[in-house]
Image (cartoon, rainbow, N blue to C red; front, side):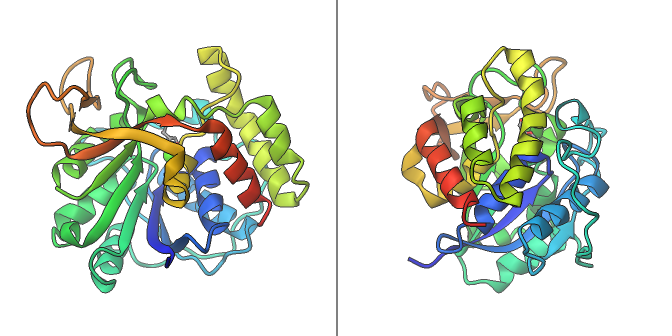
Length: 312
Ligand code: RIB
Ligand code: CA
């Protein structure tokens, strides 16, 4: 089967970085057309620098990086240095990137790549706030029927992580998330219910470090930093490795399970801004607009991740 053409729209962030590396390590399954960056975990300048640092760490200066939106559509930007550190990739010192940013804006790159490629062949993989993806849809609605699907990390059927109600990516730009879930494209939502089953325990961190390459050492270094906040906050044995689940789903979909549901995004409300309202029992009677994945084979996921990181 031909590799799936994808665009990774991200806000690196340590977990986004691992998602990017997993994509780069899987050329038989994934053709990475471009990386587009958005403000989220850290400001846009940092996410755009980090994406290029990770590409150079993997020796892949051939992949274009397009910077996108520096802030959400309507609400002010809120970042997460408290999780990811000041640089967004704390835990490792990588050299400043020599790879220049592509001149084309991320929104224009998404539209161009989807319109250039045959219908139904490009998958969008957002792992940050959905600002770039939403504005691409607004700018050129014709991309919607041409998309193979949108496989995103965001949302939650149950509790949020930035408020009790909302997951970070949807909280940061709730209006963008609403546009994406209402656009009509096939959406697969990988939310916190699933990613909190995929924890970077010390044993799994040791498996990554035992790969023994400079790249694996760098990954173990920044994941060790990334681990600390959620371990303390949740009292769990490791932080959830959210974003690589998006790429793992494309490579080995059998690792994950869920069902099709209606999902609506709350954009107002004092307590529920960014909430993904997952109509799991179809109380609304409205048609499903997303495949909501809620179960993960964590061991299978980490076996895949270690095997693929060792290839780089
Ligand atoms: O809530 C987790 C998500 O928000 C992940 O994508 C993480 O990188 C941050 O963007
Ligand atoms: Ca992210």
